[in-house]
Image (spheres, rainbow, N blue to C red):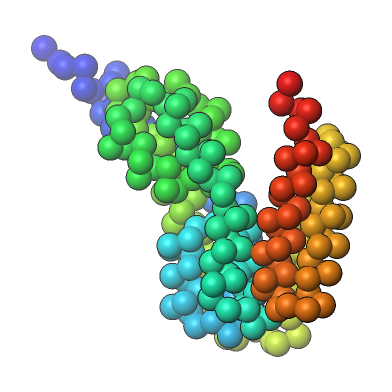
Length: 242
């Protein structure tokens, strides 16, 4: 008598979940590759070695923070400034991880803890759209495949960008610096359309950054602008939680 471990099509639940996770993660991969390549080129342009910029993608795996860190490296910011700035920018990951663990109650903690380390805005969004997989047999493999597809595509794109940064003309690589600002503007505009006060917070953070840059380093100015700007959002947006 055939067991339930084999599906009607002959594939095991493990294989089916992995295939589905890769399929769901494929659009993320397509989106990550060009951005990661741009990051790699800019990181190389900022003076980072191929090993350093690839290692950052392996251990940090956070696009916005990596772009900001590269910008700070190019500006000559210190290690402490870069670490604090990326920590503040990535603080939302704590909230996403807690939400991820709460939604996927059908998966054991031994799976959720390592998976939460691979969460990004995109993988979190896709995971949230497929909460039913957590209740299925071998469901943890779905989320593992989804996150690893995004993770390895980001690393591969970063490495490729670092290689291209060594061979493409300097003028072309310098022009790609606009990608940093375009990415943040692209993230900001949808939020401003929904809530005008978000735009006020962004302008306030920008002014704080400009003010602090007059008497401190650019790295610490970014840290102050990020922290004070985020703190202002607590008061400006507190009515939205009702």
